[in-house]
Amino acid sequence: MKTKFFLGLIFLFFLPIFFAFTLGQIPEAPASSPTLENTGVSLRQLAEQRGIQIGAAVNTYPLKSDRTYQQLLAREFNVVVPENAMKFELVHPQQDRFNFQEMDEIIAFAETHQMEFRHHPLVWDEQLPAWLVRGDFSRAELMDILKKHIQTIVKRYRGKVKTIDVVNEGVARDGTLRDTLWLRGIGPEYIDLSFIWAHEADPEAKLFFNEFSAEEMGAKSNAVYDLVQGLQQRGVPIHGVGLQMHKALNNQPKIEEIAQNVARLGELGLEVQITEMDIAIPEVAGADFSQQLQEQAKIYGDSVKMCVAAKNCTAIIFWGFSDRYTWMTSLIGQGGNPLIFDKFFRPKPAYTAVKEALKQ
Ligand code: XIL
Image 1 (cartoon, rainbow, N blue to C red):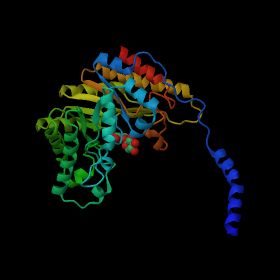
Image 2: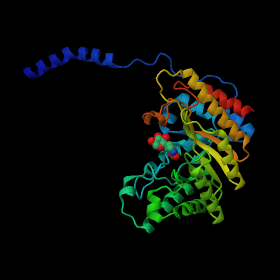
Image 3: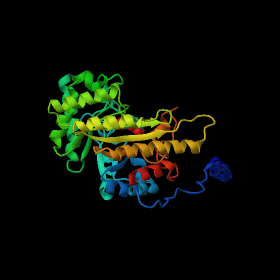
Image 4: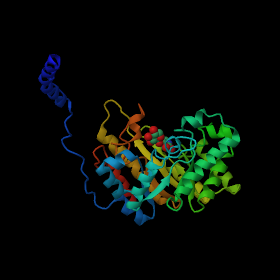
């Protein structure tokens, strides 16, 4: 009894000290929370007048928790792409279980705000679940898995989703087919089959082959060109090519070459969409940041002008829209601040440049 009383006294003695200490640890709220500047006519309105789409990749975390993020997204864009929600490991975590929660949340947001939702990616070699990577599947089993994966997703959202990145990053730098789990397990026909299965599941959807570093003319874009032409010749349904366009100030896009590439794909009767644009600003000691922002703006503006001028370029999608949420922060050494709004959702010079390009 006495011991309990004694312990109680100690507890009461230390309680205020504990609170004083923990309160001192609580970080202060930021002096000013992000504001939503009124920037006049929105990118979305301008793009709609032009008959092209403008979009952004989104993650569910800020989509649920950040009001400024939601407002800006709905105001400025008319397409959303799941940055991660449709990655194999998230949407199909176990062989016999799909998880559509995040996809449904993003699609619900898109519907509420009359935005289109783009499927990305159905078939890729990254963000794969352990059951798939470690499973020792035969060719026939792997084909079954892929077909079920594609058709379950596409059928579920049939009629709601008009554009699909069917195969993502299927070509290697030297122009050969990328060495993927699907290539090793099924063979090169996994690409044809993926398009055929997606088309079977939704004959109305536009099907894209999406690639990185295939924007300019060169070995890789030649290989993409040959690949999609081959699909067409074999009667495989394909409607477009997505050019990701992850670039940086020290790896600038060569706009004229991209226009040339877009045009030759157009001659095949294919649409082109810029699907994942971001322009990283490398951290260079002594660099003038405002100068870098201007350089970044010019690249954004020129790229959008290129797309607007090309008849078959039908959408420009950025890989996010605010520097507050960008995959660049996790890519060590690649720089950052790659998007058109800053960390506080203030429009950057890149935003103005995109707007001007849409006005022309
Ligand atoms: C990235 C996401 O942005 C990251 O959050 C994730 O950790 C890895 O994938 N090409 C693609 C996208 O097609 O799906 C990738 O997205 C970026 C490169």
